[in-house]
Figure 1 (cartoon, rainbow, N blue to C red):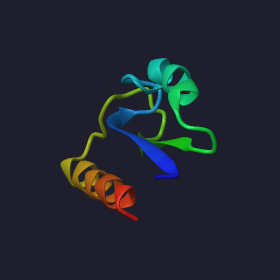
Figure 2 (cartoon, helix red, strand yellow):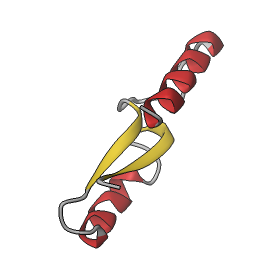
Figure 3 (tube, helix red, strand yellow):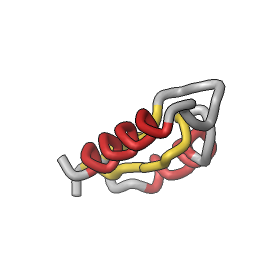
Length: 66
């Protein structure tokens, strides 16, 4: 694989992404990249609408397999 994905349901400013990114990237083989897949940075860990949450979750999962 040329690209590795870090996938999390939480917004990018929450969860482990901010902590682990700088620790994982040096371990990747030369020429490989690490990309974030998840919600955009937000002051809230979840959206206020269940429907929006479902759509965002589906989009997130779909983006991982493209």
